[in-house]
Amino acid sequence: MKRIVPFVLIGIGIALFFGSGGWFDIKNKIAHPAAVVLPDQLAGLEMTVYKTGAQAAADFEDLHDQQFPLTSGAIGIYGDHKIIVWAAGAPLNFMAASMVVAMREKILQGGSSFTPVDEFDKEGRTVYVLEGMGQTHYYFRSNNLVIWLAAEPALADVAINQILEDYP
Image (cartoon, rainbow, N blue to C red; front, side, top):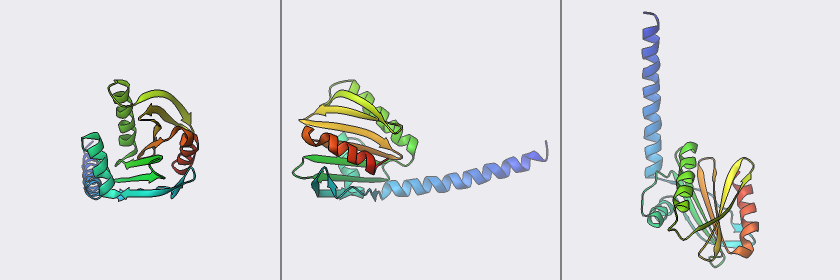
């Protein structure tokens, strides 16, 4: 037993060292969000507006009236607002999954501009489908990214299929 104690203490010290380094790295990424690359074209429409990094993260916070621990982000507008894509990067995959669950629960409570109409599984991920504001909306998680797509109904099927290919 006495021989194990030093190894346990060394293990705890190593875990604390790397854990604090990881936490510092995450805090730095949150302070300086990176860009998420979005497709130049979606459903045949060119991207006309592209916001990334801190600017996109600030827009997410303004839109939701709260702060999120985002390490990356992008907003792309295609055509004349016919399609909009929001991509928000969480520090870790499980945090992105939690964000999607929280979004779903809040929308299901009612009182939002969105009406849930469907959900489907595509290659092991759940894609939620909503209607609202004259558009079809989809949201899902791709690794540590939360992706939200809003599209005019005539473009929605093509746009979501392309986004699902771009963000597996």
